[in-house]
Image 1 (cartoon, rainbow, N blue to C red):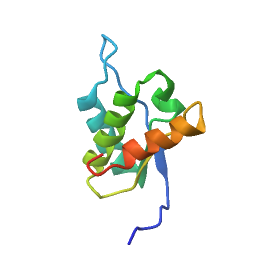
Image 2: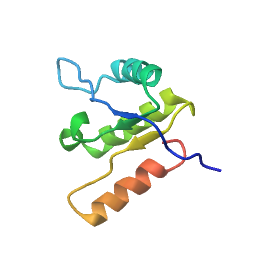
Image 3: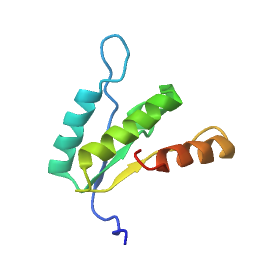
Image 4: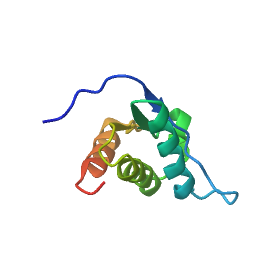
Length: 99
């Protein structure tokens, strides 16, 4: 059974290296800090630079947040794309087991 989402879910930023690559270790640290202060995580929204990430990076951000939360709190991943078809496809990719 899924638990209801309640409380504060923090919209986190997506950290990058100086070279512009995803900084997944920094993202993991950020998730830990936010979980200590809130009730869950919202990743990949406009605050998280969603529209500058490619699909692989969007999936990596969602996967990293889910792994780091480790079932202790809900993680909501933004999946809105330019079209319904693309939004649905990304949602299916992120909802795959292991993501």
